[in-house]
Length: 86
Image 1 (spheres, rainbow, N blue to C red):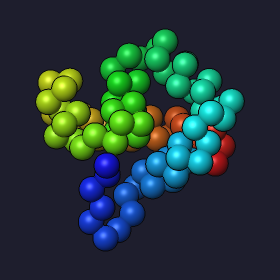
Image 2 (image 1 turned 90 degrees about the vertical axis):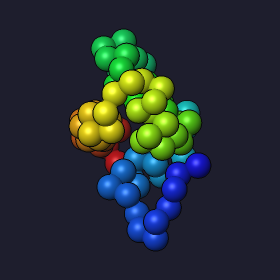
Image 3 (image 1 turned 60 degrees about the vertical axis):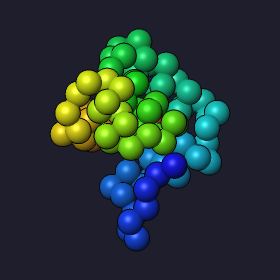
Image 4 (image 1 turned 135 degrees about the vertical axis):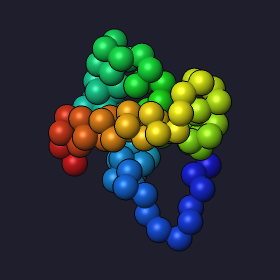
């Protein structure tokens, strides 16, 4: 579960889109494309937005710094906002 600290995250639109459109054609295609092109980015996406893991949990699972996680999530969010057009 996401840890909420009284404010929305910069990924709130992504979280809500996935929550309300989990089987949308554009989202499913976006996920498939990401899985084929960049497995690490897909795992970060999956762990954060689908499995709702914290940054530290993702860091421990993938053995990468939380700063790298943020960099990947920013790129994923940008691409997703363009691809899914929300």
